[in-house]
Image (cartoon, rainbow, N blue to C red; front, side, top):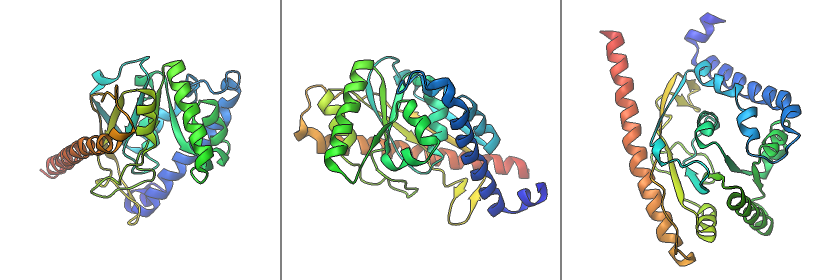
Length: 263
């Protein structure tokens, strides 16, 4: 097996994702008895995901977080992040202790991915039925009320689906509607590109360095729905600028490491 792992990138990808998903499911089962006593409490997240932080070094992932000074604990905000892969979840797991109290928006289908769905619900994840606009609106309003009442942050992927392209997908309105409706600041979070180490079509999953940049919060105080298109455009432009910059830095770091090894 070590020989196959070393020389077969296809085997390496399948093995790493198997370990990843197996560990998530195992932890979901094992920690339900410890968090079931306070259902929906975001503090459960720190308990349920604690062992999952070990997955990052096991899978060869190194997270570098910049802009920590912009994360204000116990201040409600809407966190918007770009979405590239299920690997994003490991970045969330790594950063959750930095936020202290944070929950996330997820599509309703994930709730039925048992036992993960049950554990996520117990940790305060807000599930949205995207195929039912009325239900989705009700769920989003409930999430907003919870965020304001408990002074927690709400993590949203505004692209709505995964993409590893050069450009982020157009943002959907949900996160920005919540921010304006609740007069909450938007906290942009940018993952650098995974393409230097992860390529699903080519079955490649190598060790990787990811830069996550937390940008200064953007106030929505005094904003109305008419301001939403411009707000969305400005936030996406800021995130794209950082995405391009940090992704280039990661590539240069990788090239430097490769050159050092070859020297």
